[in-house]
Image (cartoon, rainbow, N blue to C red; front, top):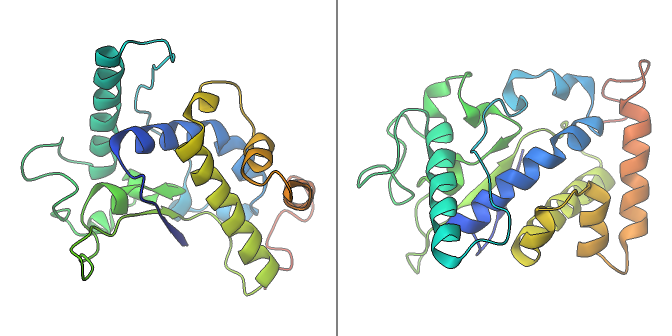
Length: 212
């Protein structure tokens, strides 16, 4: 599992991140092996946040939509409570960071937002909150190239959310994100993604090939 931290974990960025990941889910599952596709610990999203932002809203309407989507995001990952004075990112989840090990919860989807929505880690020396998004779907590996490329893909996604939210409102593919985030070096990473698709979408060889 890979945790990604960002200074942009505000309501707007988290809402747009979830919406983007919904759009990318099919492609992401095309580049992972069968052992991860059908794994209870990294299941596909089975809930939505009701994202309905068009990009032409006035300030007040836009803020209201972000607030509604964020409340929905918090609820589906928290699993038992909406945001209030005791249930927010300043407090720990009452069932712990594992949400009581309840496999039915969204915490066990391929992307876990719980560490970004609640206090899962103690604050640092400067009392800054340490919040992360946990990506759970890559197979275990000691292969440096796989580790590096997966981190680059995830960092590219985060970069896109932080810098091009309007682009998320359009039809978008993983290759668009890679080209935007790595304008000088995208060809290698796109080739790697295509190779993963060719391996893990075949009826034969759809397991952990050369994972180590």
